[in-house]
Amino acid sequence: TLTTWLWGGFSINDPTLTRFFALHFILPFTIISMSSIHILLLHNEGSSNPLGTNSDIDKIPFHPYHSYKDLLMLTTLITILFMILSFYPDMMNDPENFSKANPLVTPQHIKPEWYF
Image 1 (tube, one colour):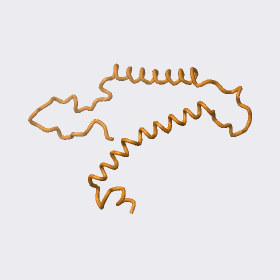
Image 2 (cartoon, one colour):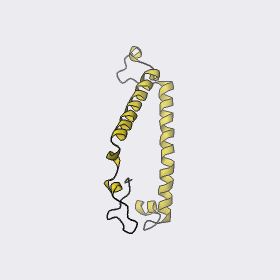
Image 3 (cartoon, rainbow, N blue to C red):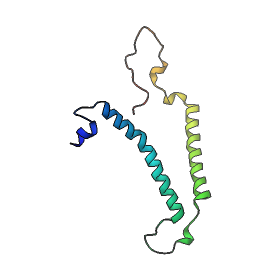
Image 4 (tube, rainbow, N blue to C red):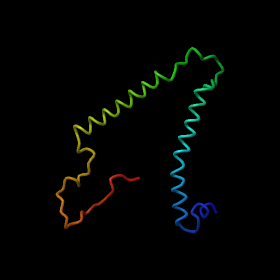
């Protein structure tokens, strides 16, 4: 079956980890490559118009108009995040970070910072 082939056996084993590691390593490069080819083709050939009308008068160049708009939005979001973290630094921290450390006692609730 497909599950047996994907796992490399009847249970999750070394071949499973190798296959999924390879998938997670190769997949981002594949997506970036396909996106780059798509943008290159759009830049060279242009996009099709489903109405079939002439839309040359409505076209504007990507750079500088959209590039500056994207750069402005990125700058705005980073500034907002920086301001929130500057004025309210405890907002993103775990409340356990404020308890007094005792090397002889293990904390009751240990969890990772992020769940991936």
